[in-house]
Image (cartoon, rainbow over all chains, first blue to last red; front, side, top):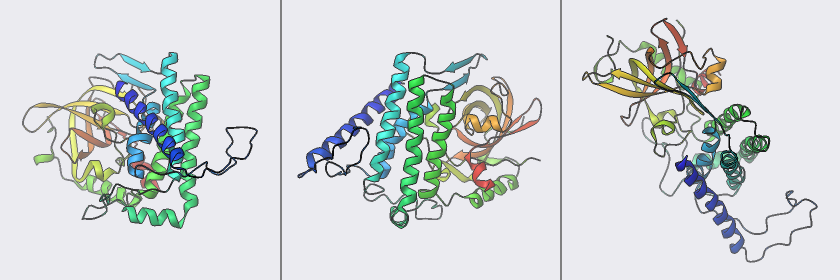
Length: 228
Length: 134
């Protein structure tokens, strides 16, 4: 939890930095229209949003660590002695940690609407070579440009999970965190399969499946534990 | 014989530490040319999201008992396909089929797990299966 806590702290700091950078970089902020509910954004942004990191880095250093708060919130561990340890938020502090993750994920995911490089400079993903199975940043950008509606829909899908988690936190209903975690996993995977590794499709796995079942009896270097 | 399929994504960091992502391509973590077969004893079961894990101690070629992390599908996916949380216990002898990690770490992406005492084969039920079913 210490690792997660520090990572979320970093992520939260990053959100603040990004917000501050955005605010400070705006030379001529537009005047927001009056809104009866400050949570309802009916106006354009107050200023420009300038990305600091690529999509890949935003995921690695913000969204992914924030999601760990959700994934790690409930677990069931069967110990070597057979004892089953159930982990779930119990204290107010536990729920606050989960809220940190949900809020960071919720607000952070919208930063994907700020156009930014998909990878750091020089990083082309695993898009070249014989085992290339990922789209290159250029291919991803083209896909997003071609259909930005899908990009935004994927973002909203993840955001909806964040809202679900936030609602669970308010009600402190730990049992529902299992479903929320599953929803989070599905939202992440659906987007990744569309934009990151679409080549790992049904045909890819059927090939793997066949290869595994056609494999000879374990021997040689890949035998982790010979039959006794 | 029931066919097993293996996982698309990895989360070894959940158990092993480090900075691996919860989600990433199968091929980034696992080697599709290294089919895995492991027999050993379960020492720990982690029902965690986005993947459940078994810890299995198996005897390697050099005769040394080594500890392996076995990545499965999500708890919900496993439950929907016949797993129960108490089905695999510490001390159970199992046979695991799947794929070894690229980097030589003791992680296997499981396609299936067989309970040796009953002979029952359990589908590892990762997202891989959903992709292959499409």
